[in-house]
Length: 310
Length: 189
Image (tube, rainbow over all chains, first blue to last red; front, side, top):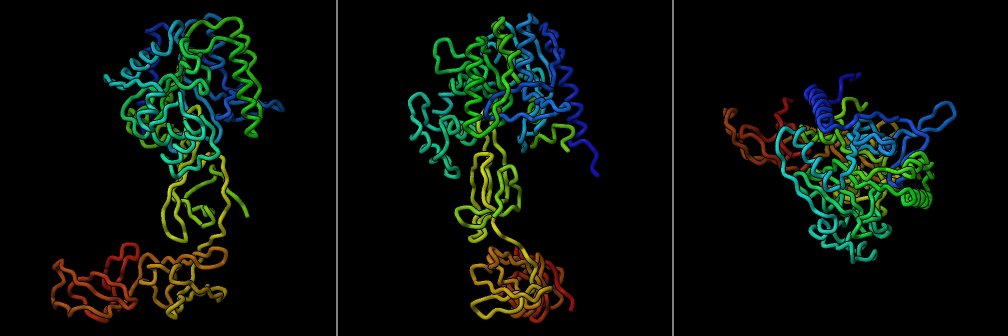
């Protein structure tokens, strides 16, 4: 029986050092460290994310797919800027870069928008990698034009399917919807070309998740992702603070789930009530710590970064 | 027939793609944190031997292919077909040139090999990794030359051409790696 950790001792020590550096980084900036429950009666409605269920006697609960909802309840209660290091869980996500249980660093900066938060992400990553890195920032639309010649502001679905099929002959694009085509292009054509740290920002509003719409352009969400080469490391937003918009996004997610034959998930009424009472203007980001370790130590697969994957 | 979802894809799994039996070589899960998941799969078409890339939406299912590998004994070739027998049952199968492919270069009567059956018919033959075959044709050997590194071409009893050391003679046996077609050692009879 192989009982040893799947990560090397070097990685285990590096993880411990990074946790210390993170805590120093945020305490220097007067963030509050918080701890939210892993088990919840409601969960993320995102149709592309499946929650792992757990049972307490006869009550079905969900393992959190991210600590976002609970953290926003702290913010609405007046906590000020907060962070936490936690485990998150996603069903059926297994692969070289995915593990159903993984580690997130998530933080919220009161008074920041997503551009200011990108600056802070850079400072943190420089701190954790003990060097000054260079970062590229490019908006989603420009990035897609650069590598695929697809302009999301003008292309229609039939043409997008055709174009995606040409760029990726291995895929059957006939039954993909607009966002699925974009995901396919981004994952399989665009990100494999990226080099070093790259922020992609201003996602289409259909992929807003919990980001607010851009003040100047309702077709765009104030959302960013950070990649290192083709590895996705972080996802951040200027947070949506409007309860009504948030409820309608949850409902739309659940309608999409139903259309795909997936179960509707219970909506987090506590979060909606918190937004109702008032969430301060803030920006938040989740950074995958296992993947960051892969980058910092040059590891090929996530099981080398996670201590136990058996 | 059973079917397999992308989450069950693993190396060696046999599935039907565009009506052809295929074997999965590699399966990579690709998913943006928020967005559609895909599986990028490297597949070998078992009929043509060609390797191709396919991309599926995660959760899609493909029909299983009724493909099995069975150890059989090679009996003989009649010029058109190569005949094999399952040792336990004496059941015989005839494979055509398409199914046998380049493997015929390593097939010696009585040797065992792996025959791949699709819906009960042979579509592929895999020789053992190492075979021992007699030299039927080669230039005369250079006496005493066992240390020098030179090689010469030799024809083996199955028709395969292999580079062998200079000292070997017609009638001697050699051990060959069938995956690379390279001479490994001389076999003492």
